[in-house]
View 1 (cartoon, one colour):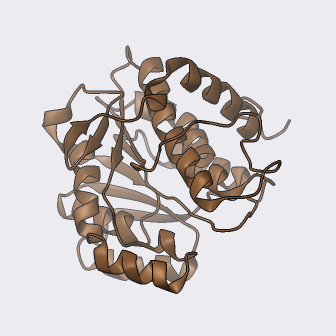
View 2 (cartoon, rainbow, N blue to C red):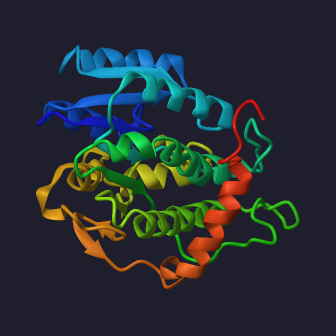
Length: 279
């Protein structure tokens, strides 16, 4: 059966590798993009595989307004979404803000998938056994600093901000799985592996060089994404963390249900999830 699969971050790295594989498997892809030049290059590559089985649409994940507009387009265009893959992410070495004035790493890596997923829940509910796949990282150690979640009171630390956002990905996954456990929709998170991607472009030259030497290929990193999106082996499995296509144990904090519930409430407030555009 051909599935409608929405994948973020498909213009480079792991996302591009996953998009190609999913297209080769015969599915239809809905691909949001921010960079026009990268989208044009991706279009040419995907057309060589299946010219009529993908839909590239603009969406700036650093803007709640853009996310809402994209979600509205998807809901008006497609009857259902079988798989939603939240893959896009950033890593900033210095403090930056999103279009909404929120620290960029937290905004793009956590709040964007939180908002997009919630806006598309109705389409996931209309699919048969829908899946949500969230890309996290083993760097998710630590906790959520609710007193300074945007690093405005303390000195900005790019690695700490990234760690927090990746922990948020797993906490979001677990709370989403809990909320949807009786609706036939599964939600799982994964560690794609240490992969050479554009997410590290903000690091210094030496660090980027070492990453390039030591890291795995994007194609290898995409394997667990595709596995969680399509494999019958994970049918019905939800709220779990995967590495190398196998269930793994995430940090103690990532399994804290009360922390997950608190993060959900804060995320609702920060995204204005239940506030209409007109308001």
